[in-house]
Amino acid sequence: MDDAVRRAPLFRGVGDTAAGALLASMGRVELPRGAVLFREGDAGDRLYVIVSGTVKLGRRAADGRENLLAVLGPSEMLGELSLFDPGPRTATATAVAPVVLAGLGPEELDSWLSGRPEVARHLLRALAQRLRRTNDAVADLVFTDVPGRVAGALVDLADRFGQPAADGSVRVAHGLTQEEIAQLVGASRETVNKALADFSGRGWLRPEARAVVLVDVERLRRRAR
Image 1 (cartoon, one colour):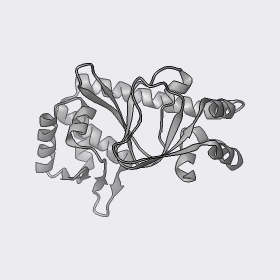
Image 2: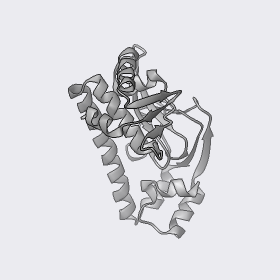
Image 3: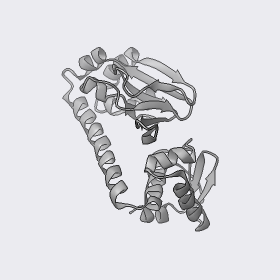
């Protein structure tokens, strides 16, 4: 557990002794695929760091439609907003694959940040990066067509979770259904299916069950722009 958690922004720039003390105070949470960590509207009181597996963050509209905000993996944090801005959870966190997390409460976080401005800076940078990613997603919804958004989502997942192969391809075991990919890019499943079929026909990717092999990442990267 230590290696994945130590790569989180919460631990950057600190020594092993201090990091070990915080690790000892963090609780371990294990969830099977499909289990909910917390729901939109719940009272928030803990920050989580993903040790292994992936978690999706989603919101549901009043009419039942779902929007997938992000897919997070090892060393990434979630739930931090409720610690810095107390209030209800803004999204539902669900395990995409079996997941292990380390949880941290507000008392431990306040004690940890006290006297450690370098940690606070890393946390602020992580929050800023999350906001930048959100801004990019909003801009894509306005300015980029659906195939471009699908290509962009696949490249982003490959950059963060991909496993490069000797032939230059990248396998991405994202664990998402096509419906969830559609929610991630803000489009219908049918439109996303057409985009994936087109990319496959061009030889840019090879679909697998809850995974995809990106055969030509650069072509997809250019299509996303």
